[in-house]
Image 1 (cartoon, one colour):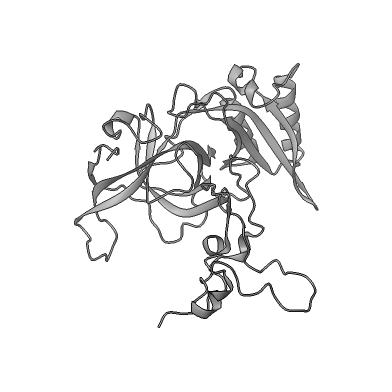
Image 2 (cartoon, one colour):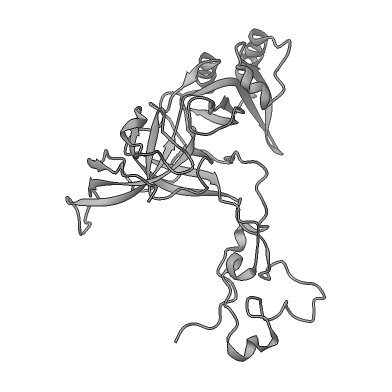
Length: 337
């Protein structure tokens, strides 16, 4: 007999379930890294899904060494530009931005997103940042990078998306030297994320507007005699008489979707530069052609087509070992039915 009692099928850890503040997701933590200085993340735009055939390289799998069909998500990742460098300090109240330096050659499109810095002395800002590093005030270095959707992707927008990406590896002085060298330059995904690596994927989920408690929380639809009152898709009661208020844990209608979500340990099956080799006949639905660099991520990714997707080195990879997959076939069959 099926389980009748189903008070809630959703986690309260995500409460309050309200719309994300920005379509650009944010990271509050980054993985530890002790190698040479590098950028620990990247961003792209979701294209759609397809499938490929690869050799199953998962140890002890029933299909190990055999061809298996795997669903993949295509993310277009054109080069990003570094607009600035930001140094963070730390005190008893947490981390705070200490100082920053901006590039002298910023694209006009960036002015659609932010107020462009005026009368900014780049050399003086970098010297002040170096002095802060020598004084031991700086704890982290971040690159302020922005995407280039116009002309390089299938996303019909001119406004770039600006975000912070952590610089990690080596000493703080090495990180600052690496970051200042990137000012005003393009950064590609090669060297940051390799084929076979594991990453964390973060995006804003598809918005569904106001939904009832059955769809939003997965509660049980009322049965037989209980529904004779004229309602089925609602909860049995709002709570006890005392306390004299409705608790926030009670599953009720409200906003569903358009939340920031992170999926951990997603495997990168391929990093390519020629989008024509994976674009299906007629292009991807609601996106079009893949024009430049791309990545194939195993499985699904949050958000709809054209949504900004951020990639971060896996923060808790565990026993997963990065290995290059053997791909035999990528489907380019039309997605138009």
